Image (cartoon, rainbow, N blue to C red; front, side):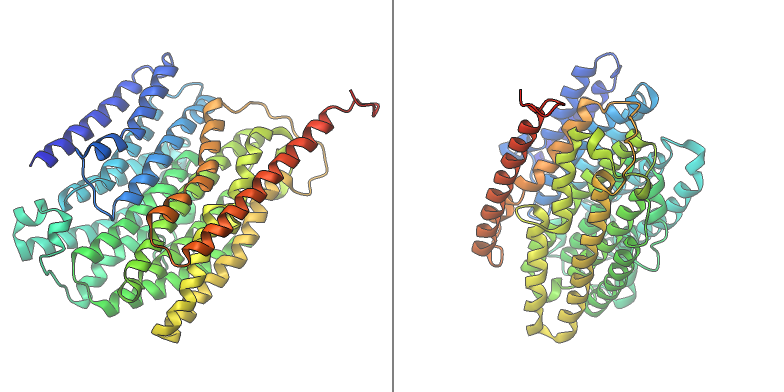
Amino acid sequence: MEMVVARYIYWFILFLLILVANISPDRRRRLSRILRSIAYLSIWVPLILGVLQIDYLQVFFVTLCSIACLAISLYSEGYLRILFGRIAPLQFIIDSTLVLLVMFFTAYNLIELVVLWISIEILGFILILIERGIGNWNIATKYLILCATTGDISLFTWLAVVSLNLGIEKGLLAGFNELAFMGISVNPFVTFLLLIGFTTKLGQIPLHFWLVDTYSEAPSVSTAIFSGLMSKMAVYGILRLYYTISLDINIFMYLLLIQGLITAIYGFLMTSAQTDVKKLLAYSSMGHYGVMTMFMSFLPVLGEVALVIMYIYVLYHGIVKTQVFLNTGSIELLANTREIYRLGYLSRIAKETYFSVVLGFLSLIGIPPTLGFLIKFLIVAIAFQLLTYGEFYSFALLIGVVFLSIFSIVYAIKYLSVYTGSYTGEAYRPVISLEDTQLISERMLALSLLIVPVIPLIKLALPYNLVIAIIYVLGLLVLIVSLLMYRSAFIREADVWLGGVEA
């Protein structure tokens, strides 16, 4: 009971900080930033003190939430100020969504999870509308009908199953760890109903066609929330469901495996045909969701290994997609277009963001020492390890890995070409300069892609841990040397006069 009270007190303080931060945020900018930063970083204080308890399943989602929420909140301040000249009241809508996401990933029981899920979906509908208003009404409605409604089907089925087995009060209020030992089991049809809402939120075929429109037409800040954080609600939901209820294993494995494989192939293939940088990243997200879904299907076979890799995948995808989707906002503000072949010059007019973009590019491809390398190395290693469980599982994952590896290079190069493409004309002069909060946000996320890999290397029993650690250290050294050489060359170039005589 004390822990329940402590959790609600923490949630109240969290929301109060955001509320105060959004009272006249345009006049009290510094105070607003400080309060919002405290709110998103404060999650670790009650956890360290033992006042707030979360289980092993929640730790990595909370870690992602803390990093991404702070970055999105800071970035949105500059983004909204450039677009509208002020951040109130839209900043409060964004921060409210972020706070509810923190609460969602720290929820203790099923009723809290369901209420927070529905609340976030409603705010997601509003997030689609905050920039273009009624112009995005059809897209927002499609999202609400397809994504939110199917999610509610799975959630209310979950509530019904638990209530029928334990009674309404106990079923709603019992903690997730307690539910795991209740021995609740369901038949194949109910397993399907429990899963379909979560896979729809992950944009899995055949209920995938809401995703690209939503991701590409929503404001970039909103898309960062959708791809970086809200999609992870579905991953968390499936994992929590798997460890709470005894599902039909055949339906669980084959539904997730088949949906994931088809979606991964389709999503990654479609990236090669895109000329809009935001649609490019939207389809790449769909492809990654397919690989995630495939990997979750191996939970009954791989057990703890699959869970550990899912944790790392959640961190990787959440951070990198938050970064690149926020960066698409910078691209639109600087160039007033998202068309890849009309760009190619941004490295000349947006040097402040270029380093962050390069780190994001390296992580998308999977180059050490970034977090992208860690997850891709592990996925390939596990794909071969699955041969001992049957060729079908291994070959299915290998197909997904091949598409992931090849097309991630394709779309990452297309993304980087926005900054360093083949455009030979004069660079357009940007009509604005990016705000400091935007630059800080992008750099923070980029550096996270280098720092976060240390956490699983230290805390988790990863396969091939020593090999990964050696490659990580070597990759980090190469990156540092490359940066020093680049900086040295840049300084020498700056010391040359127009006539060619050194200063």
